[in-house]
Length: 569
Image 1 (tube, rainbow, N blue to C red):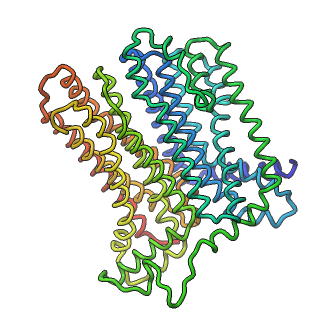
Image 2 (image 1 turned 90 degrees about the vertical axis):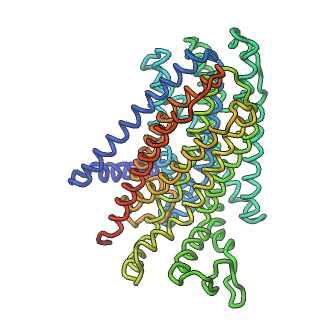
């Protein structure tokens, strides 16, 4: 372990050296980052406080049901961190140039594995940890928790919760690498995605939040007593359930019941870290050797008589420069396993969300619960669209690398290159966004809450502008923050610039949610009281959404386009 801490020491010193560069440009960038982080943290704090107050005080659903909602959100968060770490760990543990360098040194393979595991975890989870702290502050402020609660919860509950997701991710990845040599990479990945899909789908079949709300309508005001007697079997022992129970008993100030749940989670995480280290010590080097053969084996042979789809030797009706650029973008994407695997993961998650949402039976009576349900689905759909844009559009310019000089010196207009680069993803993201928007409105259409599908029209229109803004914002700032030295698309989408862009989009989403919240509140109140609602009230909302989205899109794109035209070094 002496070598491990020696390398960690100099990694920390290197990080501090680069972070505390006191040049003018670096200082401005760091101050801008601090301002953006602080703004988003405050917004997250206020949002968590307001939502907690709204659900418990206004809707009277009870403290227990609210923590069941938290449990469901924590499950989604756990799966997202787990799947994200599988993809990021593949790039960090197997494709990182540093791994190849360390493997040539007299270092134990277990030390290299442990070093890259924690490097991967802290690199990908630091921002989530800080934002989680802001949310916890907002949540805890409502219940009047002391500072000791925040410190102990973040260090001994939330951090182990995230570390546990990362441990499972790396163990699953190593199992995949182990069996890939026998069954093939694509077969193993297809089986893995199928297992995830089935497990997540069954979870939401059992833990359907709408069904829980429907059940408590017949038990009011004894909601907590009724729900406390419910059992969900194996799901009660999942990490998200343990954290939710810990928070529930802490909210009731029953810490003698809360601490055992946190202790079980912490102990289980320690055990999993030890298990992970043992597995890495025995199998990491073997799995690393397997990874060296994965990419060549997954590429089809480029034979003289064998033509592929989007083959450069095929001609089309497109103009020659446009055709070459389209084929280049397509082939470069699918030749990188981390790209298409992550795209498949995101599509699977979207599919699960669409299927689960469209099957909801929305028969809620209270207008506040209808509004809360609709806004939750609307905000989550915007988050999914923004996440897709962050992962695939932000790094698209930086991944050109030093080869960008060939494009800059070629007889090619920069505008054409930009249009082709955006063409794939703007169609894909708008299509995904509209699919999610339609699926989230199906329960409201099925419940016949309104004589005309006004919600559907407003929702699809707003989602279109959110998708367009996400595409242009991430492309523009991806070009502005590009340094052309990062070859890993996942790490390129996890840089400081990417995080700032994502936080900016989150502030934009919060502004959109607040914009549509006021007319929608009156809309659901009118439906509940069977009054007529004037659709003209949505005109101001539409104007604000269009102006805000258009301004942010054009501004971001101009910043990025100007950055592309500066001197390339």
